[in-house]
Length: 176
Image 1 (cartoon, rainbow, N blue to C red):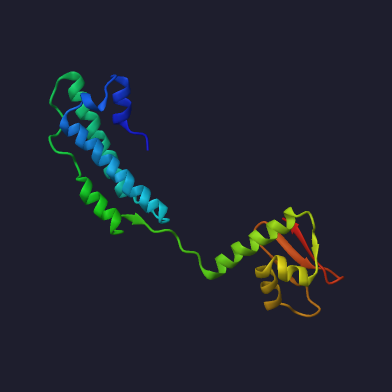
Image 2 (image 1 turned 180 degrees about the horizontal axis):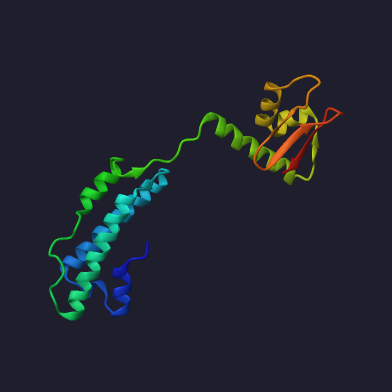
């Protein structure tokens, strides 16, 4: 996130030591919320739009504090719009995060097969025996044999690849 207060500091050639105590506390609060959001991201979650809007409001408040310093006015609200502790508690308690979408078992298996077929294509060998598939692409092997029909076209396909049995009982992988 690009902060208005940082741009104002640069534009007006100010450092944090030139700011009022309120502005310094506001910047500290923003940094604390950023750390909490980073921890949330490391857990595979992302902050909600509500949190991002609160952070943006706090940034705007600090920005106006800086403008008050620059123009020697007192137009900015006395109170920061949100307390960092409240926002951080919402983040930590999961009340304000957008949950990472959980994949179904079928989607996970599909992703695994996609990954295996991609590796097979990248190896530059395109035809495989069933025993080779068992070792090199176990999820693909399992899917083929769970649905195997004698005298039928056997194989599996994903969004980008397919692997099909040919008349020589070899499985040929191709990119779609």
